[in-house]
Length: 459
Image: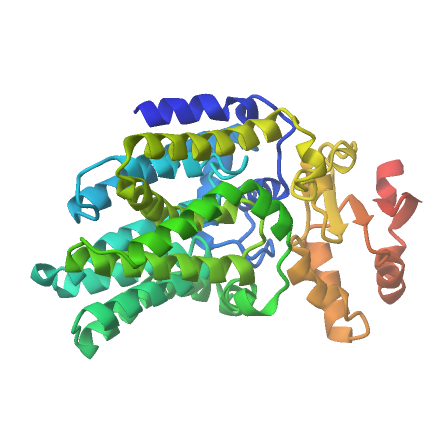
C-alpha cells in the first residue's frame, strides 16, 4: 500500500497537467469512442490495436468519455496489481535465498523511469497475462507440479496477452525454451500449450466470422504484425539517457548472478528463464514496438528480478545503501526533470513527437466529422473521427494506389458510409484523390493549409 501511495504522489505532476497527452493515448480513446458509436473494430475503424485492448478502451469511453485521467488512474491500479503479483511469484517460488519485497520495490521504481509508462496501455494490459503465464511456467518446472493444466494455462495466458498486444505472442518462446531445457515435458503437452494459445484467437475469429469480416480481422490485426510500418516516437539515444542507470545495474546484475554460485537448481533455472525473457523483450522492443515509452513495461518483470538479486548480493550494507541511493536518485531526478522541464532535458531527451501537437489539436473542429490523410492524428482531438480510415499505415494501402479502379471504388464506398465534414490533407494527396473521384471532389472546397471543407457546411 505504501508503494501505491508513493507512486500516486509521484504521478501527480502528470495527472493534474493537461500538457502530457500523447498520440497513442488519443488513438486509444478514439478507437473506444468509434466503437461506442457502432463501428466494428477493423471494419468500421481501421487500426492494429488488439481486440481485447479495444474492448477495454470502449468500456472506458462508455463510462468516462474521452478521459486521459481515467486511463492513467486505471493504469496505476493495474500497475500496482502487477507489483503485488510479481512479489507474490518471487515469494511463492523462493526466487531468492531470503524472503524480501525488493521485486515489488524495484518494479515500482521502474515505473518512474519514463513519464508515460503507468497508464492503461495495451502493453500494460497484456503484461498482466504474461506474468500469470510465468507463474504457471514455474509451477511446471518444479518437479512436483507437472500437470496438463499448467501447459494449458500458459497457452491461454499468452493467447489472451496477444489479443491485447500482438507482439506478446513471441513471449511463448520464453516458455518453450524453459520447458525444453529444464523439463522432460512430453510432446503431447506442447500441443496442449499451442491449443491454449489458439483458443482465444479462434473465439475472436468466430465473432468476425459471424459478421462476415474474417479478412478484416486477419489483414488489420494478425497480418499487421509483419506487414505494416511501425512509427518510432523516441530515439534510442533518448532511451539510453533516461535508462542509463537501469541498464548499467541490469547488466552488472546479470553478469554477477548468472556467473555466481550459492543458488538452488530451481533458482538457477528461474534466473536463466528470466534472462531469456529479457532478451525476448529486447527483440520485441526493437522490432515490433513503436518505441513510445509504453513498451518499456515489458522489461519490468525481468529487470526487477535481476536488480533485486544484485542488491541482495551486495553484502556490505554501506555499499548496498549507497548503490541503491545512486540508482533511486538518478531515476527520480530524470523523472521530475522531465515533469518540470528542468536541467534543459528537453534539449537532450527528444519525446516531442510522442506528445499531442498543440497547434493541430487546437483547431476548431468541434462536433465535425474529420478524415485525416496522413500520419498525424492530432486534429481528431477537437473533432470526431469519420470513415474507417484511421491508422494511416493501414489506410495508405488504398490511398497510395489510386490508379486502381477497385481501390477508388472502395475509397468512395468507405467515405460515403460516413461522409466527413472536413478532410485534412497532410501529404498533398487530396488533389489526386479528387481528380480520381470527381464527384467526391465536387463536394469539397479548399479553405487553405490542406483543409477541405464540405460545401454544404457553408450554406
